[in-house]
Length: 380
Image 1 (cartoon, rainbow, N blue to C red):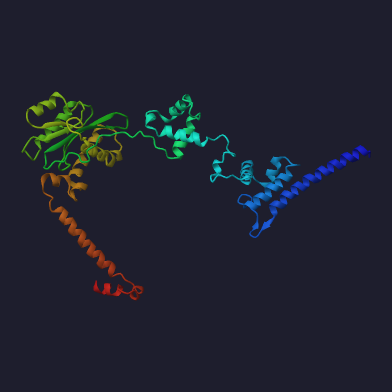
Image 2: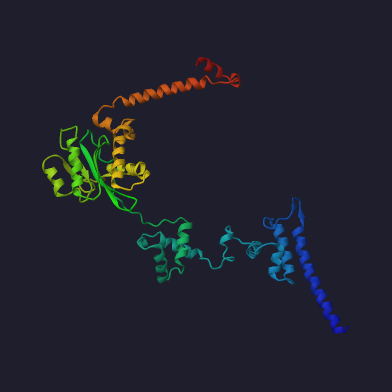
């Protein structure tokens, strides 16, 4: 073999030895044991990371960086984080170290952004446009997304609080039946997408449904008809009832005006003549739809009318209202359920006494050793 070939072979073998030595050095650094067993690369302490970094630096002289990281089993981002951690930083917040993230905003720029965000001078400017305005003014050249992140992460509040007028906390409250009524119209969609119109009148004092109607078409005559039915069935004739209605066309019209002119009722428009809304009848619509109508397959007007005809008597006569201590709307309207609250309270007391007696009598042999249990059981 020629001398040149021998020298090439020796150089190749030396190269292979250096590679193998680098690999062995990495493996030795990985397999070095501590008092707790094999080192885990992902959660190693600072000394372990320093040892691995030194082995990696030595190996990178003869191996590609990708091969070194593959042997160590760590990602390039983790390796970079270890290197930055070993370099050290005087800041308490290492994540904000300007040396590791040189493109971040300076403290002065952050203070300028905070001042503009929280200033009354720019409270009418949206945050994204305020970022562009700051660039036009030459104050801070940062993207709107950076502004949004700072506002969100640092909890800055922009001085843009709306000044709302004081809203009433309590709605209209009548003191007797047929003093205040509420009328409203609502719609329900059938399976085929067509609408069915519902009209109803509710008494404010008792929450009783006084009259209702289901119609295939929206007609003013239906609203007038339920008002006339409610007037005929009213139990109090002391004064014409005050009807609260919204601004729908079925309420302020000539036919309803005629009823007002005859002295059968007076009319008040919600949120126009008074500041409160017509929420009582709207709340009843929600109960009717979500607690009953929407539980059925509504295919025809007749089906809706049949379901409403079932629910209204149930609501008036059977279901206790939460505002009346167990009484139903009918009992409040007709004044015949005054004894119900006292009866329910007496029933609660009797049930509690029975419960105490049964539970005190159910002590077992183990309870005999507990002071006080035996005496209670004997007393019961």
